[in-house]
Amino acid sequence: MQANVNPKWWKESVIYEIYPKSFMDSNGDGVGDLAGIVSKLDYLRELGVNVLWLTPIYGSPDQEGGYDISDHRAIMDKFGTLDDFDRLLGEAHERGMKIMLEMPLNHTSDRHAWFEESRASKQNDKRNYYIWREGRGSGYPNNWGSYFGGSVWEFDQDTEEYYMHLYGKKQPNLNWENERLREELYQVVKFWADKGVDGFHFNSIAHIVKTEGHQDNDDDNPQHLPVERAYQMFSSLEKVNAIANRLHKESGEEYDIVVVGEAAGLDPAQTLDCIGDEPGKANIVMNSDHMLLTHSSQGIGRWTNKSWTLLDLKKAVSHWQTVLHEQGWNANYLADHDQPRGVCRFGHTGEYRELSAKMLATFLMTLQGTPSIYQGEELGMIGGGFHTEEDFRDVETLNYLAFAKRTGIDPEEALKVARRNTRDAGRTPMQWDASANAGFTTGEPWIGLAPGHEEVNAEAAVADPNSIYHYYRKLIELRKVSPTLLYGEYKLLLPLDTDIYAYTRTFEDETLLVILNFFAGTPHFNCPERLCERPRELLLGNYEPGEVEGHSFELRPYEAAVYRLG
Image 1 (cartoon, helix red, strand yellow):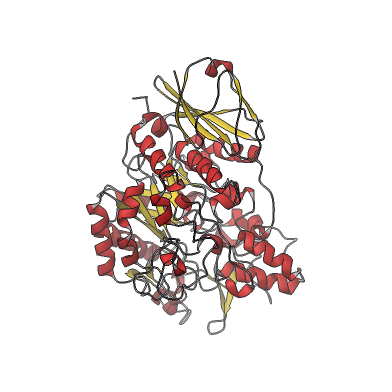
Image 2 (cartoon, one colour):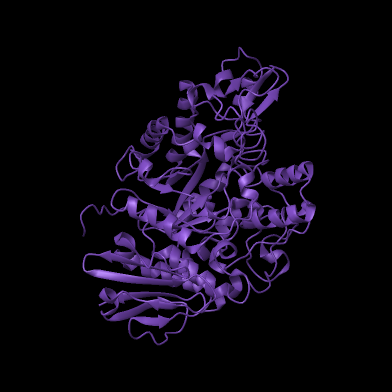
């Protein structure tokens, strides 16, 4: 075992992210639920994943995908009851799987009892549970922009002050400077830890403390400063470390759980003080640098058509892989509920869909860190099915389309941008079979299906030994038995190659070589002599083995191969 390698169950796990609303509907109301997840646990166990990450399931009016919480100790009515959750937890544990809950702590719903009291009067004892400010002259308290467009401030007619919301106006920001509020939230975390959950994903944890005074970021932009420019004013501040430590202490010292913290906007070096294996630290850090290559996830930046390059992807991924080695732990992912499908962003949706999906799976599973598969990625699902504005459900997308109308953007161009970047693209129903509504529901689904479920579905994938699903299974099995894939050091090769992403993973005396062709061309891989003079054993690839003798050989479209070097 190398120095500084501290084995932990969560380092050796594979996470599967579930967006419950779109996973499986058990009662025909068109909305996925907890009982639906229970019904698919055997499918997930066969895939090989062992941690199920559930996006918010708490009491909520569901105006923002459940991230607008109205009761932290309840289950959203559409999803079931606390008894249903207890059954899911028990059934998962019986199968050797763990449950990780996503816990948004930056804000609540405007229907939360705390906020209803807070807005009742300026004298209410919960007034300072949220962030309230007087206006500046006839305008907003400052010029910060919301993630969903417009100002972060919303005027309350009754108390004649503004409350802050970094996201939608129905998601008022909690005031983490208030000690009573902090204690309330610590007890919320403890409530679920006491129930036996195995981990927490602390959503937007980097945003929960704002700069003192809430000053403008740029005097030349008096209102609605784009959030990507005001970002530094409410993200990644020093006080976040102390709060994350307390959260982990409250939830982690007595329990064998994992704590995942989002690190949007952080450089990996900035995370080192607050992540680690020991109690009082977040265990895994989830960054989004590679996701921001095609658009900024903040404000109007999402609604651009910036192209990514392989050199940029190498730089973003390698930076985190290198800085955190033996000091922290990465969460690796290529898609989630807020992003387009991985094969749509980084792969090919046409004739090379299966090959590119397998190539991306190889990439995900061979990096150092804990991989997270988003539901449907193991099938190579694609987005789509959004023909008109009425097809969208996402608040952020609808806000953009309204903005486009106000500012005179061509409607067809706006729809094209929305189809490409909408969060709805990753939220279409899970495709279970070729029947009506893809086997997701017997009713009317809450959002339309992506095209092609007749061919791309779990039933067909499980039956086909050469499917993307079974390729994921092989990768997961390989990762389970390979200390090198778990703990080996990552070294980037060919950093300036614009078609091929190649790297090694080295642990003790073993070196694995990973070669990935990210495009449909047939580039030559020129292997460094120090590596390719050694014997090569193909462990896994998405093609039948070809001729790869010597230091240079041709790669096929979207080819992926993992070799053990002798």
